[in-house]
Image 1 (tube, rainbow, N blue to C red):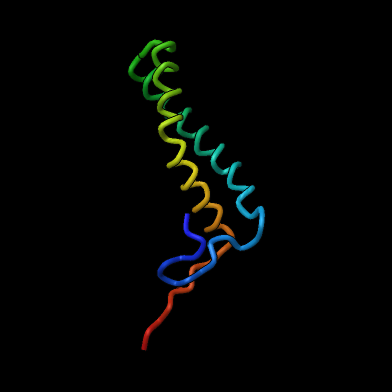
Image 2 (cartoon, rainbow, N blue to C red; image 1 turned 45 degrees about the vertical axis):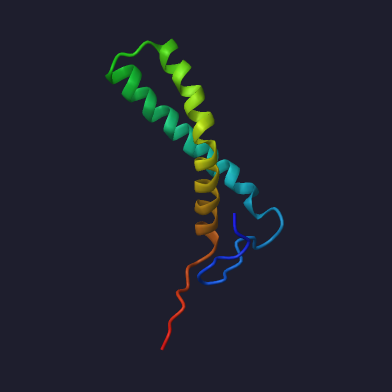
Length: 88
């Protein structure tokens, strides 16, 4: 990820260890994804649980970079407010 925003030059690493809390946000995203897909595939579409788990593990591995970045962006949004640069 960038160290500074290319548009407004906001520091994306405010302090060392700032993104440590984003792992809890990432855990929430993984949990929400797992529960949502469980309801859709197992309860609604009546897919066998073994097939569901066989597909879930590779899906979570493939989605790891996406959830990682999404968690970091979410954590940054909690603590850094957006201040648009106005041009006269």
